Length: 412
Image (cartoon, rainbow, N blue to C red; front, side, top):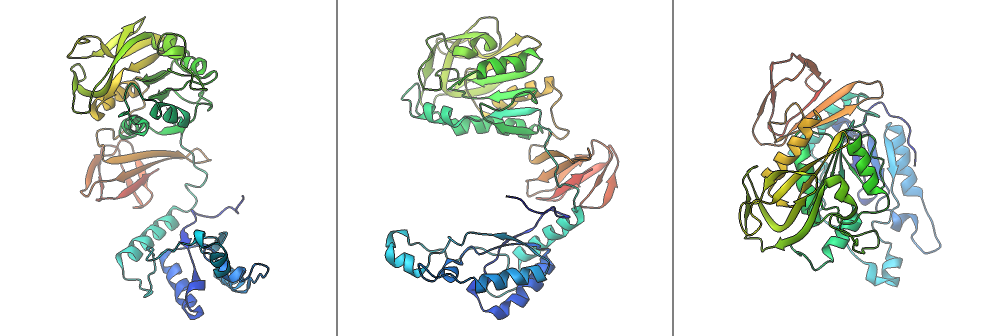
């Protein structure tokens, strides 16, 4: 699908005027203009009108909606119309019936423009208009990747051992959260993705290792990058067959370890990892270093003093192995150590409630988005001299930079 280039980010949503009197459309477009809405998704519920009988088609109403949008200078995203079924289909196939009611809207049944929702939508419309085309075509210059693998998820969670309590999404989210709250820009990639753009590859719970992935991960480390994986990684091939080698299978040379056994406990059992310090739960692999050096160890039980986290020099880079399910503070510490090695900590990494995201425009202009997710103001110190595109003011390096509660700044 293609669309013409626009002078700004398209802004709008579903518009279903076939559901109310035609006289309301004048008010609709007046309010669209006030809110800065320039793009309409139409036709979502029009199937009953466009095909009133199995062999009858009538586009009169839809044509009128499209013509009015064109007259007002608004773009249109044309939907399929299949969100609401025509009566003849419902009667012929009652098993497909369902309804939607009380869906939220920018403009409610009363057509008001003095609601909180309308005011906030209109404010966003003004901000997008002020931004113009500055963000169009901008890309994320991520040097950190998080490897997410559906097959590893399925293979891990259909297995009865070592623990059914391990949830792949929870493990992956913990490492993604750690990297993002540290201010790193992160690409989420699959096993076949090109790894050459990345200095850091986080591959937690990489249960299934397919094809030449292990070799390509080694290439990342050999050229100076860092690869991290965790417990339950390197166990099976693409057919979910166990590798007939020491765990972690083809990842062992990069990680510099051997996993001899593992312990699984109920969720109320806490294993301390004092060097971080952190707490660990659920699965505790017993690791024998084979070139790797311990970063942190278990604090109790028969495997006290054995590695819980290891680091293995490989080429000009490193392989990190986390042998247990660390709590979020523990994951944060490990990930930040890795990001620090590559100078990938964000300028506001000490403010976890402030999300940062970098975009690079086609002309090379760098934009830093700052989003305060807290209900209180965020008090920052400007890391560089820049212009806040939304506020329209310049801020000097070292000056206070205040984000309103749930506020946003875009620094150029």
